Length: 178
Image (cartoon, rainbow, N blue to C red; front, side, top):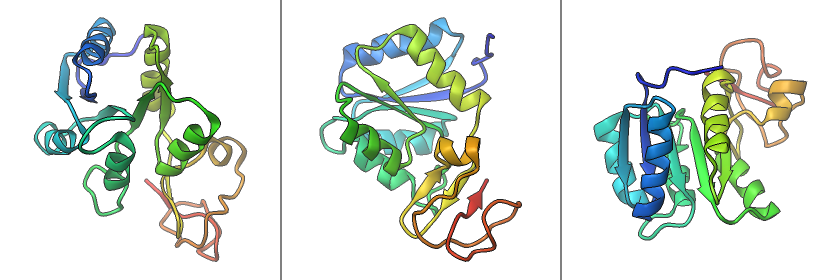
């Protein structure tokens, strides 16, 4: 399946100019035409306000404000970009990092070295299989795949029902958002 990425705006936040070039070139090869770049999390947050991106691709380890801190700031329910799909790029793929990325509210994790196929699969996933957002006492972000695919209950604390028929009326399980 081929996606039309020409109408989407991507924000690449990566401290390595070389990696930004690789990511930009791959995205352009997939048909993306609007690609905005930033070299650290702080300038990435500023670029978000200017560019109004549809998809955020960011590195985990960066100076000034790293990717994890940037995601924490974005995944605040009051942030206008709280619902943006986030693809986190990292060379650190140990289990603890994967678990942390999930807890941060990252949609997809992409490990370095990056292949065009892996990047396309992650971009395709956030477009073709969008995930509802949930809010609990300890989490705000995309519903983990177990909930979306198997209808299990997120055990992150109490939440409030926010529309739809997901959750169980606000008595301690899931708040479906979006």
